[in-house]
Image (cartoon, rainbow, N blue to C red; front, side, top):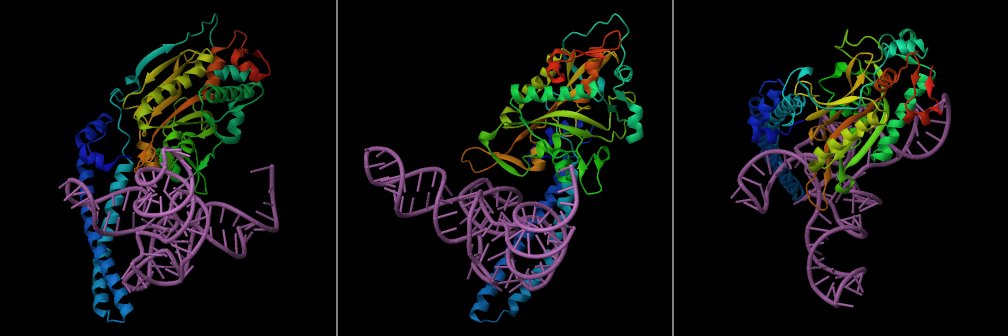
Length: 422
RNA sequence: GGAGAGGUGGCAGAGUGGUUGAAUGCACUGGUCUUGAAAACCAGCAUACGUGUAAGCGUAUCGAGGGUUCGAAUCCCUCCCUCUCCGCCA
């Protein structure tokens, strides 16, 4: 959510930033609405002042046993005027709010312009891709041959875009998740959290999924929504709070299932478990001081990368262009892991700095020392990592000619020492 | 899910229609005193918005949202949450 006062003072900066996102300039319309709103509000408040004063007079007069009919008449006249103004004020506020709530965050100056995935900028390529002396299979073939991955059975239960893992592959998935959580908590100081995965619409509004992206989400019959990412419960942990400055940065992580309806993704990645309606993810969220969000962003990227490094998987780091940037983000790094089965890099993590955009929506603030005012915190979120996709990466990168899979060293302690899945 | 009790400032806790943004205590901040500290004493101490160059002034906020009233923390309605008891349940 943008600060209308900031827009009022920086209309040109605001417009050029949202234009980089491919949106039309909006400051004129917003400022006009806001001006009207304030005029009406001021007028209304003046009337309220008068009403309060007159009501007090009535109280005093009654106490003295004096006549109050004339005063009552005055107040009643005021009230009818106020009624109309009150309605106008409400309408204008709602209109302004609706417009503001659907405008995405402004891209940071170092977010490259562009409107397609191809315009993302590759920063670095890390690790070395495996070389196979046979033709690499994809995870579907590998998994089905190992009898540990069934899309058919998942189809019976839930339809397309679901999978059933079983045996060592199911365990490998669990091992990956445990490994990730251990690295993030022990080495990077994130606090493990087990949050609800059903949330109210307010929470989704806070992180920016609502009101605009309802069609990407699953809603229950009880007015609760399934989370599309643990970013939602983790970030909203601090909604409507004023934190003491010394609690910043607050770093939290959670392993949760994530649910996405994948509306609009028809025909995309239909094979395999790359794009599912349900998947597990270890999420990282940092709540930090505005001065530190840039370095916190780099730190978070490092924490996500660490998982890939330890698993010895090849990947590249990409900065998303304005057209690929999520609604709430100012700047996003994607990590793309090498998938031999697809012969290309695929997204496995996305680390975003949201600045104070989400904090404003959810009213998450901090106060330093004894200063009077509270300031909005900055929020960041990143995958550390997507577990399902990481499973794919391990399977495809660690496959052997006979279709077996070598268990990466780091994961063996989590697999009861198992070295091969076959 | 049923029955009951309750939600007031950072905390505790008054307040049941009138000049109450809200007594009092604690905590916190500044000052006096003191060699220093404690104690004591004095003063200050909510948030958001509007308005103004500013000092300031104003509006709203006593779980949330509506309503009654000239006037609501106080009365009415709806919802949320917490606690106790019962039922159900991993």
